[in-house]
Length: 257
Ligand SMILES: [Zn+2]
Ligand SMILES: [Zn+2]
Image 1 (cartoon, rainbow, N blue to C red):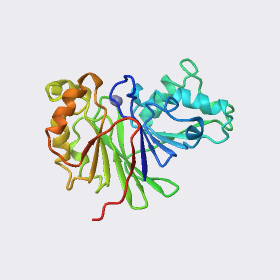
Image 2: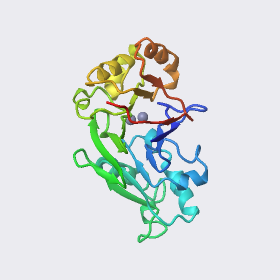
Image 3: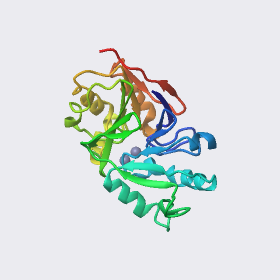
Image 4: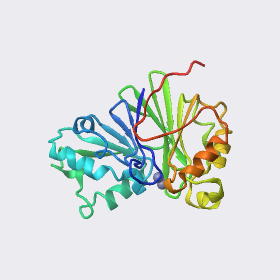
């Protein structure tokens, strides 16, 4: 499973984009950035976009992406897949014909470039031979984490979450895990109030896993506190941790168990 880090920031700054992770060229996990970093050809390979929640930094790449598709004469709808509340928020407040056109009705109602599809915890969703599962996580708005399984490889993606102790026994044994750390330890109150993690809070979540995955990717650092957070994450001495950077690519493999 190929994983391209299009953006992994918890805030925007030069060379750091909000969260967007491209799996095997066709499946995008969150849409913090798309057209600012992908060629037109690469954009046209995307067929499905999973959105964790409706916050601006996770959907802000969608408007210009769909604008590009319609201009390019795209024939097939790209599916935007999310929980019901997220779909409602994005369609009512972003693609509402006021902020941006309703691309689920363009270029025609019969053959639009965007189609909405809901996902909920429980039943798996199948995209070809990829199996997607959704899990509720604690954040300031309704938010889902996702597990993507394909040919024996399992990737678990949780962006934007506060402590969610019940989560970790449900997710099986992923080969790779993406998890957030937004704030340094001294801002724990703010992290808890806004539904985010600090290095110490993240370590407490990871300690609830029956077994740590061989690769744990950290995302969503707030740029203004990045140095401090990096220092505190290194201090955790968890060897599996990698702090992500925009532009990185990984080839995820099944971990022999
Ligand atoms: Zn958020
Ligand atoms: Zn975010």
